[in-house]
Length: 69
View: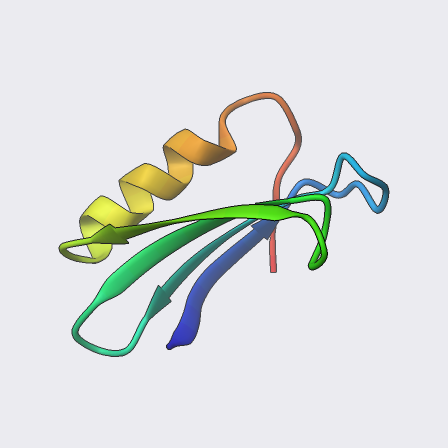
């Protein structure tokens, strides 16, 4: 899977949040990661890019100022 989109909330401590949209060209998935690479994460499969982007937007929410990487 390659990363199609990646957002980060800008925090480098335990409050760090990342949201990834990934694809292999056929399947799509969204991962929400909390606490950096060693933290917790949740992955959801999506039927296409549009639904993956909608889910990524919902998982980011308005709480932080997200940066697209």
